[in-house]
Length: 312
Image (cartoon, rainbow, N blue to C red; front, side, top):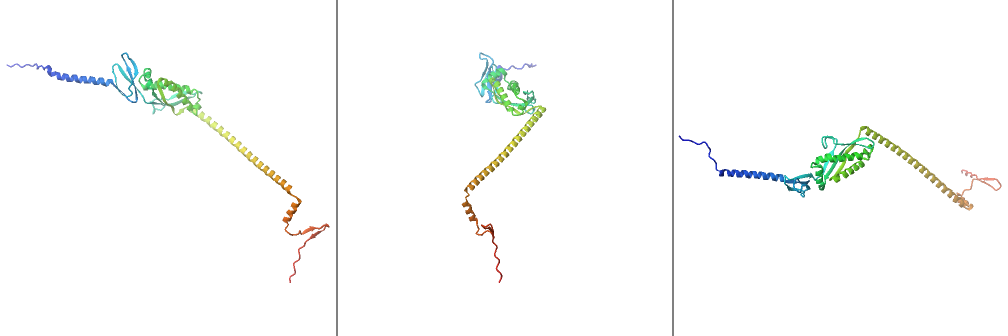
């Protein structure tokens, strides 16, 4: 009887070596690819790159010399931090359709203790030279920096400057001065920290309680009515002065004409002589004798028309 062995034949070590070689090569390539992916960082043209050394004698944060492109780092000892180079713009408003879904508007009190509310548009850029200090002080999250630190600076400036104006001024012509003063304070606070303010403005009208708005409107209407009344007084006074001037002008003209006439009469009277009067009478005589004339003896002579000749 023939016996069959159930033990499989052993493979030669030479037969397994190709599989080991290819497996080891694939593992090596995977490790190299992973290291490359984590070691190569890309800093775009709109970014500020910071290199943070975690170990070694050069521990600390330094700005990279690379503005854009690829940066090769050791992921175990080095970290790349990025900040946006472009302007960051935010709108803090009461409306849920702008900014975040919540109410981010600013509420503040005026010098006469009236509570106002307004929306603000704000824009800034990070100064590349100050980026390391910003990272050490505030961390890498730009959104957190904006809505915590920068927003608190803006709110404090608005609150302080609003206390220098009345509600009527802020709801009228004084708003521009209030906005400029708030912006100057924000710039003075943020610039040393590395944030360059590019825009600061209120959006739309400032909001006030309805009673305050009605009171201001009534005061404005009263002022306008007073101005109109004053204008009418001035106009009436001007019209009266105009009439007086016209009357004075007419009187002066009459006086001048009278003086001229008197002077003319005086000259005329001085020029009249008996010979001149006789000559004038002669010039005006029409050659006919008068119908009634008196004689030297006190009688008078009447010239009668001749009778018509009798008909033949």
